[in-house]
Image (cartoon, rainbow, N blue to C red; front, side):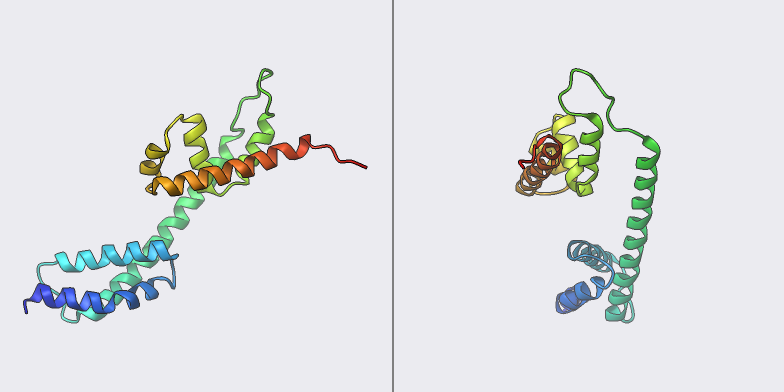
Length: 165
């Protein structure tokens, strides 16, 4: 058995444990991505580490922590930009939806759902294009888009509903 085959076998034996280890810091999808990237790096090295199992766990740990830091920094930057940006819409007399109500309803959405809505409605993109941009399946984008539209509809209709005595 060659060195590469031995490493591949070690990777396969430890895959579930490494993913579980990465989930200490990350959600399931991110943990799988970090493990895959780390193990690909291992398999591409010219010379294997002296203790490949320890290397895998250490590398997954470091990559997971880096991923968390990067994500936290990105969220802080996005929040800062969002707060500094001001109003999202320019109020217009000829539009039936109040700009502030629409903005508030959009802010209540999950950030990913909000991006899908903006790309579809204001970006005038198809679901397949959105799926490529968001790195999701088309079915997932469609489901999230439909659910987000329903949330928006509910949020925007509330002020218009009359209560009966």
